[in-house]
Image 1: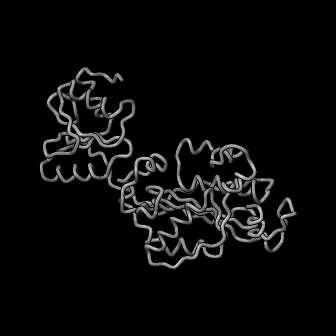
Image 2: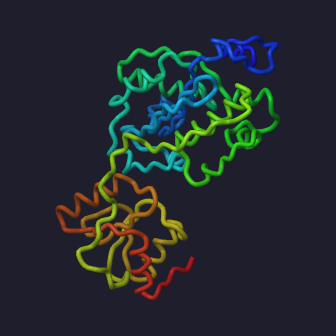
Image 3: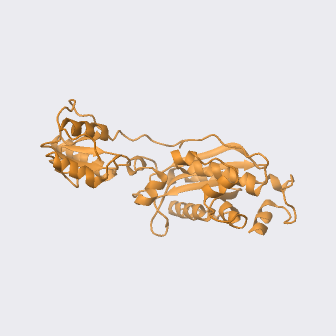
Length: 312
């Protein structure tokens, strides 16, 4: 692997640190993508993509941060990783709307990534679906390089931490640009031998389209309890698993609907709600005048009005 990196960087394998020559001024683009799952062959698609340009071992300031409508739902594991709910993604433009821009940004660069083969395979798949020819250029994988240099895990968190890179931001949110930025600093230090790792300011997706609000305030303030009303839930509620929410509703005299029906009174919207239930609720409301979509604070206020508190 080190010989391949030496060849890509245009340096002799006998040299421990990169030398400032014309070849070392090559253009690198650090990439990362988030997807609906692990298999493009199985129909998985890209939901976000980030790219950070480096020249002379330092960021140039040119970056991409994009999200897309993948045309399908994310599997639960992938959703927990990237945190982009289906309701948000389905309102975005598809990959092909910016495919030419992405291909142009990558042209002539050496691609860098942590497990870069995964990102390249999804890029190849997306370009193929767009009918755009794309031959993957040379690439450098920081994960493969780390496996040859460090003992133990070679995950991005583990390797970056070993090289003194703060990965705390990934505890707050996980995304393609965050991972690309951390990989950029890791590449500068671990492979290019830079004494100082230059960070890139976080860039939110520049093409994001804000979806309509998922919670529709009821026409009048809710002052009643649970008894006599029917509920469905989408997304995750904090503090209670779905089964406990159902049990609480039933214990307080309410009805539980696994799907949104014409007689559902309220759809409780938690974190990462499903697009199907939200769309069904909108269609039912247009035809039957209900359900109202409420957030979990409104729901627990109804629980409290029923004397149910918010016990686990």
